Amino acid sequence: MTKFRKLGRPAAHRVSMLRTMVSQLVKHERIETTVAKAKEVRRLADNMVQLGKDGSLHAARRAAAFVRGDDVLHKLFTELAYRYKDRVGGYTRLLRTRIRMGDAAPMAYIEFVDRENELREAKSPNPQPPQRTPLDPWARSRASQQWAGPKENANSGSEN
Image (cartoon, rainbow, N blue to C red; front, side, top):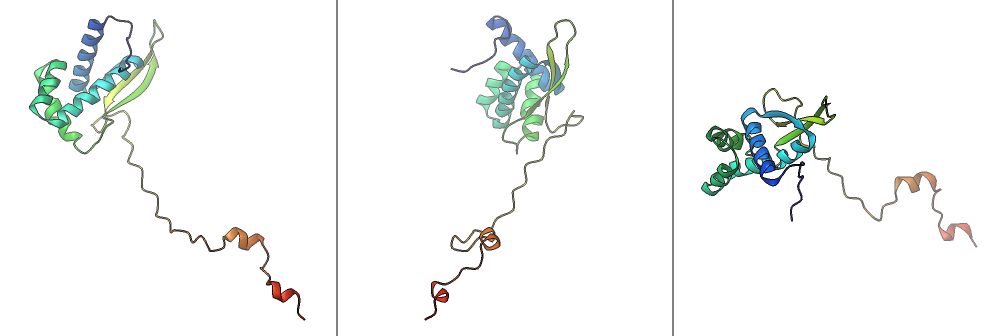
C-alpha cells in the first residue's frame, strides 16, 4: 500500500487540492507552498511528466483525468515531454524558502528543473572516475618496499 501525507484534510479535498496544485505547477513552472504539500505535489507532478513522455492515448487520458485544463495537458505532452525526453527522473526541485508568518509553517518553492529563470542551476551529472589499472596480486606493495628491509636469502647468512 502506498504511503502518502494526509495534510489534515478529507480525501476529496486533498485530491482536489493536489490536482489544482499540479496543474498550476505545470502552467507556471514554479509555485510556493508548504514543504509537506510540495513533497506530495512533487510525486504527482513527476508522474504526470512521465505520462507526457509516454505520449500514448492511454497516457493522455490518464493525465486528462488528473490535471485541470486543456492548456496544461497540451503543455505536458508537448513542451515538458520534449524538454525531459533524455532525463530519467527528477523533473522537479524543492527549495525551502522561509517560515510563514501567522502559523510558522515552513514554506518552499517547487519548480521544474532545466528551465529559464530557475532559482538554482541543475547539477551536472557526476563525472566518471578515471579508470584504474588492475593490480598484480603477486607484486610487492610500495608500503612493504618502503618499510621492510631488503629480503635476505636463507643461503647468504651461513656460508660453509
